[in-house]
Image (cartoon, rainbow, N blue to C red; front, side, top):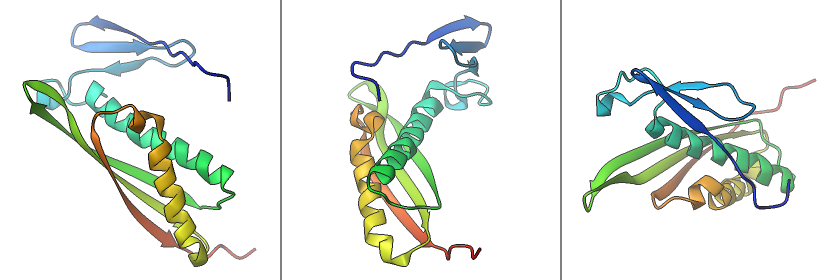
Length: 148
């Protein structure tokens, strides 16, 4: 990892209904307002990108924590349900519920799996940057490793 501080840049350009997001070295992303704000609802929006950033950061953090913990896993998904509300005349995300579903091969590693998931939630930089209340729900499934 590079030394801190890290810098990230993005720009937005609007022409008509859609907005093009650009960041150096990355493909452009076409966005629009979500249907809840009278947008078409068929593009990524700031609201869906916010929710996706939480899910993506959680899994990237999980992979790092698992590697450092020498914890073996098969696959992981993270679903995020975020609630946008109006509080004290300010529209903001008030709650985000993360549901992490982890598959492991060793039933004896279930407690470690739970610890790695919890540490990932506590260490996620996006989650730590939010005023939003965050709840982590976990589901750990065990499947036998495939025989060679």
